[in-house]
Length: 210
Image (tube, rainbow, N blue to C red; front, side, top):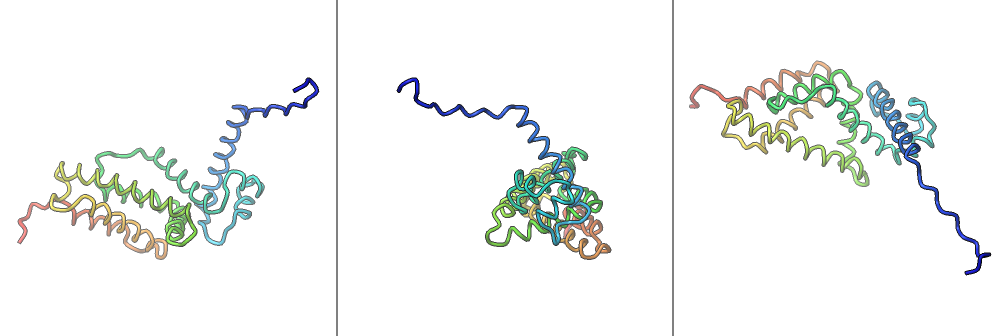
């Protein structure tokens, strides 16, 4: 190679400042999108419409979130994370107690409850990998947490010892999600009362069983 041979210019590395700005911008978009979905839910929407409401260009939204489905998943995950920060977990709460508190909080943000239901429904459709991964992972994570709570509650004498922790965890999730759907359709549905009944059915009883 002679001195006259052209040399390709070295690629300039992405600066930490640019990366940090990108992360901050993505977070700003997520925070604004949470506000939008909490107000309007996920019905009849598109990336372009969301971009307009969030206050960014359609291209900017596509840069951070490749599809509407990916955006919906990230919005819900971030809303959950922020909810966990605002409402620290009570490690001694019973499985039903956790769901009652979650239901109480969710009643203040009906749009995000509707978003969750939309994602779960989408997870059952073919060709919706982001929604399916979200729902599958979330159910597995929530079940695992509730199984631990059932075991601790049984050891503390708050939950009957003759019920399987895995079955109880799955039942509590099914009851909570089903009641949440009923509440979305009818605000008068007895969501909290029904969860309290389930709590009593799972509680240790001092009365002899006949």
